[in-house]
Length: 243
Figure 1 (cartoon, rainbow, N blue to C red):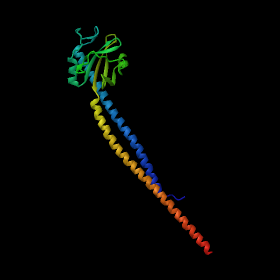
Figure 2 (tube, one colour):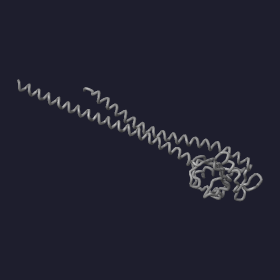
Figure 3 (spheres, rainbow, N blue to C red):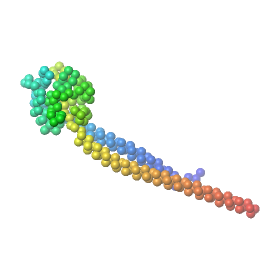
Figure 4 (tube, rainbow, N blue to C red):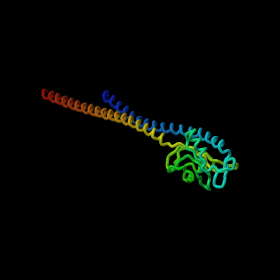
């Protein structure tokens, strides 16, 4: 059987273009995942570093915190409820939102914070048992990750405050709103999407053109073969008549 080189080359081109489309889609997905991973890693590193610094700020400001009646007490036995010096100094120096919670039964209440709620400091509001960090901190472990803070998405660190017996008596929170960073990454996603859409569209057009070319080539070959067969049959009839 004689191999049609033109058709073979065309088929190879179609396979290459189809593979290119598939790898383009996979590459697009991989790029978005990589951007998300970079964002998460940077935020996690920021939280890990700043929770250590904030803990040092808190110790320098209050000393060892102890449980009082519905509040937390500093080294001198004074309640820290609604104190603003510590949380505002951390915000000024590190740029993080800060909150100290006191444990109330099985929940945690904000007693000092620089987070605003309806233009007022959000003291008196609760973490809530359905919070992402709740189970982790209740077990005495630090939680680092995204979390909802009064209806706004934050990247956060929640570190338990424990007494001398290891009982969790409160929480130290730091966080940064992800809104600004989300806006930046959304713009990047949109630009990547636009570029990839154009590339994929061009590849699809090229693939369609190649398929059309192969189809026309095959139709021409069939038509030519049909004409040759008809001519051969006519010559054979003519030869028989002469004989």
